[in-house]
Image 1 (cartoon, rainbow, N blue to C red):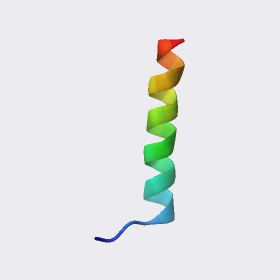
Image 2 (image 1 turned 135 degrees about the vertical axis):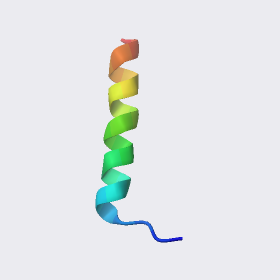
Image 3 (image 1 turned 45 degrees about the horizontal axis):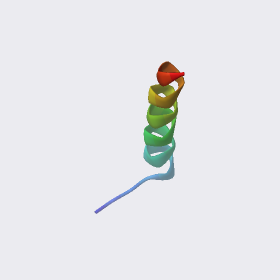
Image 4 (image 1 turned 180 degrees about the vertical axis):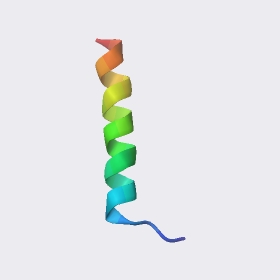
Length: 23
């Protein structure tokens, strides 16, 4: 499993956007 820091950041940002849409 190869996890790049940028990929993790992208996923984190994606989740953050999902949370932002909720509020």
